[in-house]
Length: 156
Image 1 (cartoon, one colour):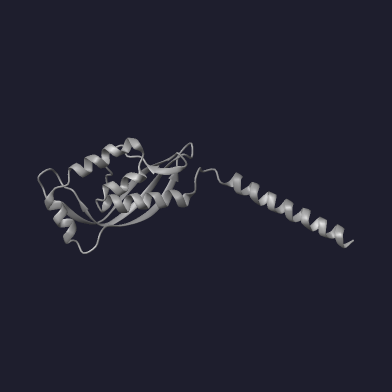
Image 2 (cartoon, one colour):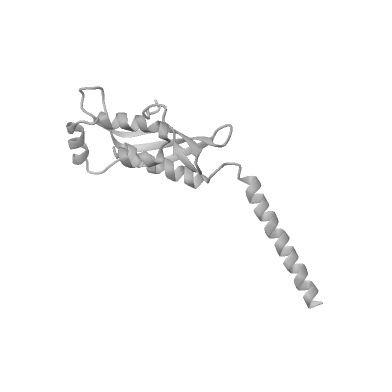
């Protein structure tokens, strides 16, 4: 009787574990994890808004590289001096995540505080206390990457 009870318990435990695993696969429709998505969006944002474009490259699609190169080409010595004189760098906070139609695309809202914003050609950059941006994310090659169609623009 004890052996049979033990087999029944083992079978029940196995069935419960199988159901949990199946529910986990069924309930997770999004490729990759949301943690991975938000971590990559946060890493990109922290590097980008602190003008560390080379470090930001690892978080963007290959097609987006041209926008980071463009941004880097617009940095002048006066901007570098302003960055060095700041007490602290830009701080980023990830907000709302919205998955789009096929779950391999998403948008992420990012609140950025205390960042140096480039101004028009010939004008000095200036510090912005707080702004919100929306990043387009794409799941590509088993990871979430930022897809830039232009330089990030703050929401009005």
